[in-house]
Image (cartoon, rainbow, N blue to C red):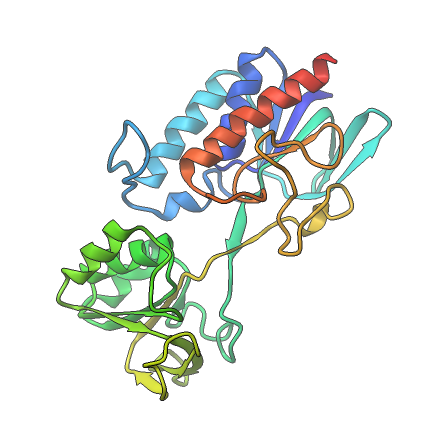
Length: 305
């Protein structure tokens, strides 16, 4: 029996573990994959206060070490279901089950797919969702980055130093990401913005040989189809929260995010949420860490009562 079980070992979950342990409560972190979350795919983080330019791997190693040295336990098991039994919770995994007095959900979000024909078939054969993982394969080649947020812009900046040509395809005429990143891309001679378009068809047989674009209807000047001759397509159109298995435990919004305000309290007493899987306006490393601290404090107060 643990005081708190945290599901997810990204920055939100591990920060929560640190704060639970600082309150001298027992805590178990359950993670189905590697600790760190998706930030471990980022080579250089520019918006983490006090450690400018740190890599995602290095940052998460530091946080993981801090949490475990404080006494947090971590098990790499996929959680299948969480049930409330009386005043306690039963967390069932693929390998067994655990009991806790409170639960913190910090499961993050997964990459959204384009949803077009042959996307899944050509994943790993020119279709990628991680520029820092696969970018090195496209040295001297042409690539397209799909998306308009910070992830897409960071990917384009990274790929511009590797690929011969980088197309940034966005359905609108303005980017959602930071203006400083847009300006950085504008200064790169091998980067071209393709605004007002969406991917319609992936070209190629055994591997990507191009992408056919259709006007999105969001930009008046985009009126005809385009074909980009590219060897790689990097998809960065947002995230989908990994919350489906908790739909009977807590309330989700129409997009699948766990409904909670800044207090990180869910619709179920004793269950709290932290990080990108929560309804919120800003999903950044600092807000995930903040959620972890708030959720941990709320869980500890719940146990005290």
